[in-house]
Length: 92
Length: 254
Image (tube, rainbow over all chains, first blue to last red; front, top):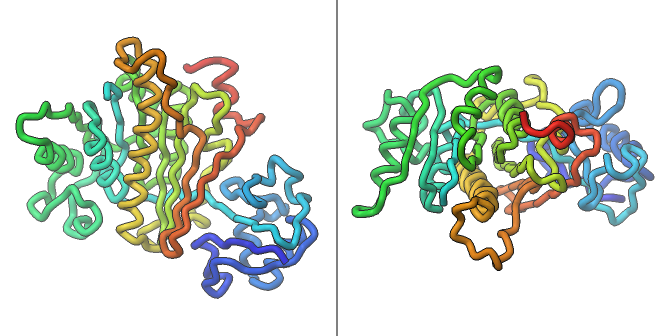
């Protein structure tokens, strides 16, 4: 299984865990399985057409999947997957 | 350092960013904010004191920084703009503030929409910009230099701002004040890194021509997760179809 690093805003779906082990041959399968285990997290990462949301990036190791094969990017057991959303919040 | 820094937002991110610039020896800074100091701001907005409550944040920040200037030292030039920023006004404002001299913008506001608008306007004008954001235990800062073709911009990494329903605000999700402090200083240091590049290229630069220019942080996005102590640096490749920065290289700054 690959290790998926969960950003803070999505940890409410993963019982507070900052990383979880998920299986999948590629990113699409991995995200399907992630949502299967932690219901609700999937729609925060992908839109209703299944595309990765425009303010979210997914990295396999240090590579942006948009520069690999997108959702078809293959995943190996030892891979570390990072989900990185834009943090555009600030403080008055 | 003869670079003009423009800090948008003088709140939880802007205060530590201003302190960082001051500590780094910034000589010219413009502070923009439309808010006034409230008692609840004081724990994390460390430029302000109880006596500032009710004052415009830009004025209170200016006074506080001037008080921190050593006796006998030349005081930096600190200009204030107490006004609300409308994205439509940004191009004219950048022309006014950054048209005649090297300039770096620090985006420290609390509005996702404004962050993207400031970034886009800076890229269109060829002005370096650092975007900062915080939430909970996490912070993110990215340095963008539109003159560097090989460095990604913020839109290369994030194509659009998150919609309000998917972007929890600090007011509702909370933020650790010290995370804002750490991130604000990181924003300042990335801005100083961009400025060092500009300074070394300026005709009046005192840098030795034989010396290599300083390494640029442009295209670097730093992500802090300070609950776990994890800091991650991403330096994505520029997105070939990025409508924001690639267009700039085709047509030049507006």
